[in-house]
Image 1 (cartoon, one colour):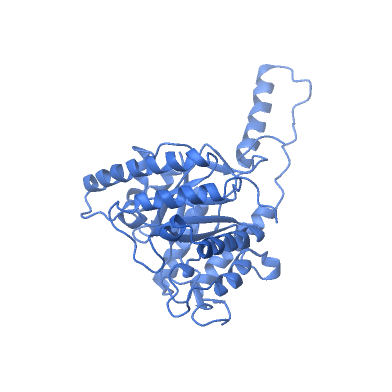
Image 2 (cartoon, one colour):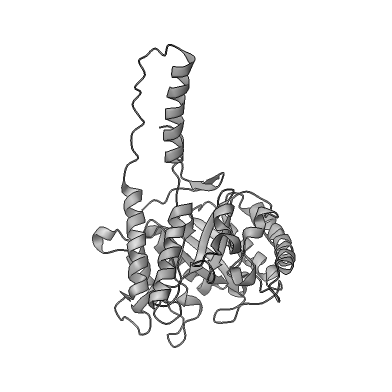
Length: 356
């Protein structure tokens, strides 16, 4: 299945026809830390086709899958590791979805590095992958899963931390874009990926940055706009809820429902965490705890599946035709001309692209 090339137009991703593309999928990162299962991708080879398939065939309808990558095997050019990355990428693209690889840590199964010490390894890893997948614009590269933990939670500390992180991101973007100018890059925020809104005052240099927030606190409460300010950020840039989710308690499900609705309301990309039954928050009741067990969603997974299937259905619907002019032609005066122009402009803005 052909996946359309993406490019950036203002604060939106668009395909070659100018149609706005919203990335809606899930995180599936069990391959990076598979306790008890060994390093194989048997779960992914079952899960990814299910995630990307049409709802008409029982699929979830995802158009993006977000995965994690480790740096050292890429830098050392481990052919086994690289072949696995290629196999998973091909599997996602074959399903008609975009593949979003994000640097997580130095080695698989290891904890994420704190501070900014990870940046050199991450840069070398992502430059190598950008070269490897040159000419494959269906692949998105993430600079870091969770970039920096701030010791102290004052606004000043957060601003200073973001400025330090942004300087690292600026260097990374320049080096990656030097070998692959068209690749779309994502960048997470401080405090374990949460806060990216400081980009409103201190943006990362370069076009086509997808700002990614890991929303694990506050978003379901009235302080949403103040704390995360994703609605404001989305007015200028592409924004994704890169990770979010909770347990299957009534409170957890209510927060998940709120987050999904928030994505819809403000036109955010979204990839809930995690397509797994072992990690938390989990979207599955079973599927990856034992080899070959059936993939069954839990209550949170059912809610996410319904959300993804609705988004898939919207992507299949043809755009409405341009409005028919009610003004007799030829246009007789300036007022009629302005009314006709306003009607066509309104139609164009609702489509998110140019007139056909």
